[in-house]
Length: 450
Length: 133
Image 1 (cartoon, rainbow over the protein chains, first blue to last red):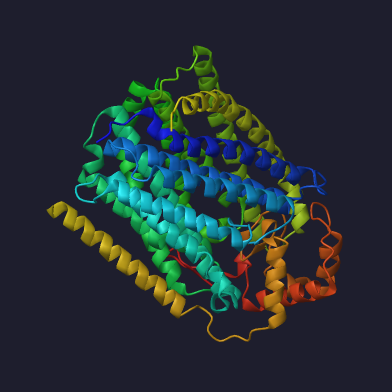
Image 2: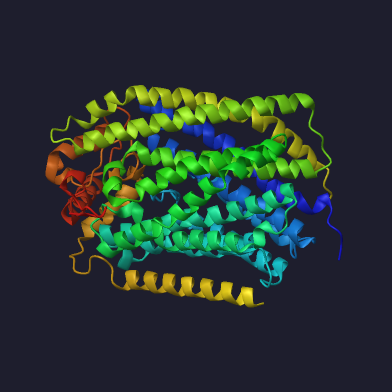
């Protein structure tokens, strides 16, 4: 068996570097979209909101997916102690994703849409994504070899890869008239797929985070404990069945509400466990906080707690009927994608850099530490502003005498101003972290040989 | 080995339950009897072509910049919708739809309107936390 060398992580680094670039692009378009809330004529002729929003959404969704794939490739090789079975296939997969993403972003600028939530690009561009994902699945399964005596993160990676493909294909069932001909049928299946799909990329990311935690702590048994598998099965059950909270107010089958509501409440078990292990978590954080990748994991932990509370609250139909369709939901999306997914993915990127032979300058650490705190504090302000805007809109939605929609939006203006300003500060914070990270990770990539 | 077998059993049961649940939903879609209006179907494609979903919601799902349009047809009528689409107030661009596209879009919004009510005030909240309309 050929020993692992830094060169075997070159394609994985490309995935992560591309992801970091997409994150930067996504943040800029997100800022543009937030500005259009306040300045109606801002870029109205060039990049109006129906273009700006998909540019933002797709860039950040692909940041999450592409970087998650890079992390799985990296940690699978580290776990196995050998290189990928098909390194060339991973490169082909990377090129397919890169070219497709570029096409998607350009197509939005020209106003070419498929017009569906999340996947707002033309359905034709879904085909290369599905092909690229199948290559990912093949490379993963063949490189892994066996599922016998595997730790929980291997199960999570495999679950995420298989079910992403399922939900991605399911999200295109609307192309068949049988599913498309009625809005209720269409939306039921659409949100069934989307609700589960988010869980699939979370499986990839959370799996990698457990691997990284083991790596930092040196405890190789954490990922094999019965509790780890109980948590995995709880997460997997939620991935499969709790998607219904997106459509509680849709006049669809009533049993979808009951199933989703019941399954969502199993998250209380995860919540209880976080509380129970709180002291251990804090003491571990204090011990490892100087390690950059651990610092990012600790931030994600904090955001997991806040967003889990919010998720449980929103899963109760009686509360969901108030918050549905409001910025309360946006707060949850932002909290999970930025606070949890982005910080976890950044932790993997810092870990990859740590493992390479590139040394960051001390000044870079200062920038990153500063950026870390700025980002988290501004994200908290950003998140709370969206929650307050959501509560205000919920109040409006339920009022017996509603004012006009535009009047309500004007009343929410202070919250949107705060969101925009916090967003600007958050981007500055992220860039302080991303600049040295990308620069040094790129150096590390250049030192690879294949 | 025994532990692996137990895990496989749990995963297999979950996957079977999921596939059965999915198949049941596909087979017994919520709305089985409906008249397919070809104009409404084309209108759905107009809705997607111009990415209306980016700003507007149907049943509270979609963008947050503009109002929910589930029941806009019965609330405001076609004559109110047409000029808004073609001239674009505030942040909304002027889409300049063709007459056919506009007719189809209106037919789509009419069909969405007929499918139910999105107003959260019309829901009854039960003591067990569930809701019903």
